[in-house]
Image 1 (cartoon, rainbow, N blue to C red):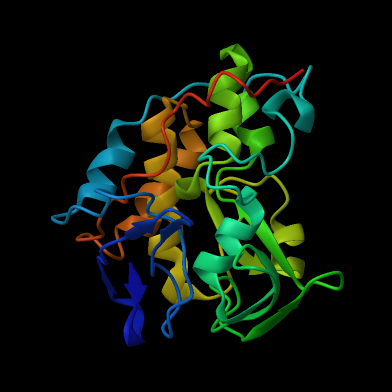
Image 2: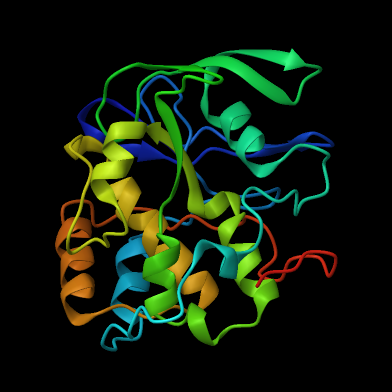
Length: 245
């Protein structure tokens, strides 16, 4: 999906090659978000709002037992394209990309613009101002269903392009593990797209939302009643060779 002036969004087809999937989903100059793999895309007609209204509501479960390791090794190559997930997302979302090794390890690129702030942010490997955000934070997912999953599904969520976005590091760290009820991007023109992706991830993986979270999702999406619902991404079970604690 590409965000145009005034906050409008359009669906964009996704191109997959042996080196991974690329999509143009976020910023007005092509900053990418996450609608997933080949065959994925948005459906129109208010699909995001409809999906938000259908999400199950429960209270937040205790965070007891959560750790990043419960979702497997960070940036596992679950799509088996010989690049880790972090580099896949950097390639997809950055512009003016340069590599330090072949066409996998990203050494430089620019978010034009960063979807959370609206500013241009430069990525340099080793001194990065860019994070890869889990749109639905793993801690949030743990407290809303993921603690009851098997490891394969948790690993899939942590590495699913549908749930990943390159963003300004400071904005991402300000978000923490917040959900829609507690955090939204400063760039108001991106909020509909952002919330639609959270709805899509929670629908795809069967995660629940709190009552406050659902109300916040519906409020945000009421400003864009025709917002598409992203689809696609990786399967919800990671290959058997991957393991988590």
